[in-house]
Amino acid sequence: MNRLLLLVMLVVQAVLATASFAHEMRPAYLALQETQPGEFSVLWKVPAMGDKRLGLYVQLPASCKPKAEPVRSIVDSAYMERWTALCSSDLRGQSIIVDGLRATVTDALARIEYRDGSVEIARLTPEAPSFVVAGSQSGWEVARTYFLLGVDHILSGYDHLLFVFALVLLIRDRWMLAKTITAFTLAHSVTLAGATLGYFSLPQKPVEAAIALSIAFVASELIKTRAGQRRLSENYPWLVAFAFGLLHGFGFAGALKETGLPQTDIPLSLLTFNLGVEAGQLLFVAAVLIAFRAIQTVVMVPLPQARLLAAYLIGTIATFWLITRLAGFSA
Image (cartoon, rainbow, N blue to C red):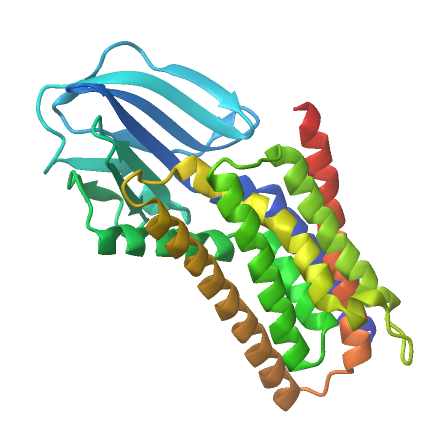
């Protein structure tokens, strides 16, 4: 038991250290908006911590020259450059490159909006740090891009995954777990769609802090679980998941708002992004259940003690996130 406790403490320290550098794993973002023929307003944003930024640099086609020096700033843990690019030829068929991406574990997202309202989205990775501008995308390409964005967002959203993981630990009946995950899905789908389309909104920083608080709440419910005593979260876990799912939907919407939706394919892109989020979430739940089964066949683990230690681990991480996010209100 002492060895198990020591292992958990080491894991806590490792996770907290990773959380401290979480911004470095957020994707970089490039936005080009055509304001006049051959003229683009450019925004380049990369993760930063304090006055240090990730070493990523965008290379536009050689035919595009800056109209003036970029305006540089650091806002909300992101380094940003804004400038106007004058392009002497059509962007179509030309390459955009992100230097330094191969040496990272993050991605970069590029969004080009043309004067006619059409939008092109491209995802750059360490394995593919450049792309050729197509100028337009088919419905299938839009669906595929936004589906992958949804999968990427949920699998890199450690706070959302930790909440789902806590639910898996809390709910032992698999049928009830399925209903609870469905309730969580329905709830965050509502606020994801509504917030993205502009029907309602909440400030992002309080939302992120409240998401951390929701994780801490489920962790506390795990700790308070007693044999023969069923709490509200155990009798009606789908209700708890639905209530907090509404909140998490605002968190999902934050990424999609930044990316934007192509005006010609709003329903398709919104639907496929949400499907990507759900696919990633189901992959995570399946992986957790398979891991549980594999561990039980290899090692005899005292489940009550393991669940209690996991609850303290989750609560510690959530509390750390809550404190850092509350501190970010004044940043």
